[in-house]
Amino acid sequence: MSDAQSARDRLGDIAEPVTSNRVSWLKVTIAAGMLSGLLLSHKLWVNSRSYPVTPVHPLLRPVRFPFDYAMFAMFLTLLAFIAVAKNPAKLIATFVFLAFVWALFDQSRWQPWFYQYLFMLSALGLWFSNRTDSLKRAAALNACRLIIVSIYFWSGIQKLNPAFLTGTFPWMLAPFTGVLSAAVIARAHSLAVAAPFVEIGIALGLLTQRFRNAAVFVAVAMHLFILASVGPLGLDYN
Image 1 (cartoon, rainbow, N blue to C red):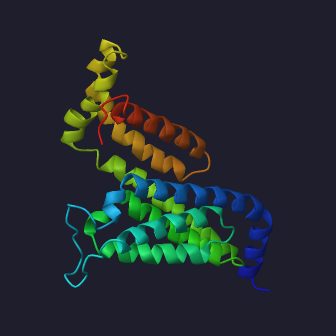
Image 2: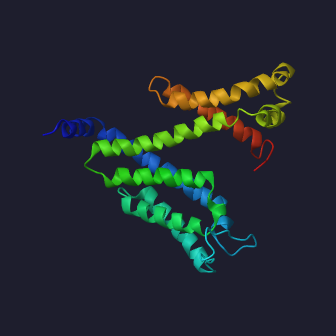
Image 3: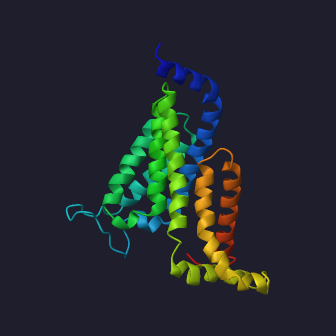
């Protein structure tokens, strides 16, 4: 038996039960996120609308009613089955293929959340299809981890600009002017300078085992702040 095979066996014996449980929750979360995103932007995924479609090539003619609605219903059905299936490798492959093709018919569908979930589902599909290769399974999960880390890292980097520092962040603090003290509001610029580095720190913390829990806590707190700021109880801004 080769050293690589022995490593695979040891890794599988030790980590498989815990990993499988985590992957199941990850699968449900990604499927639910994609399904929610599709429902919240349902007009984007059908062609029976006033806003024109923008295909990648003129030969891709719009799919007319009721077939566009049938495709949308198929997406929702596939995601529901992916969420509950024990081995959804074929379901994931089918969904990823159809979603990719459907996105070619309208470039407006290339939303960041859409291809984030699509890439993560693709990685999970590889995890479920490699049932006997622990190293390949680990690589598939690492791909999901890298996607999340990269999103936080780039999100922090792109906030290092004058528009965020002097415009966006003070605007996000507006709903809290009646709650925060005048001293905190006066330091809005300093907080704006720190915000990008906090998000970059989340990405770096997620890469480590020692600081991963702290990074998750800070990330959740950040998202709660964003929801409170731009959500229905704050600025009510999409």
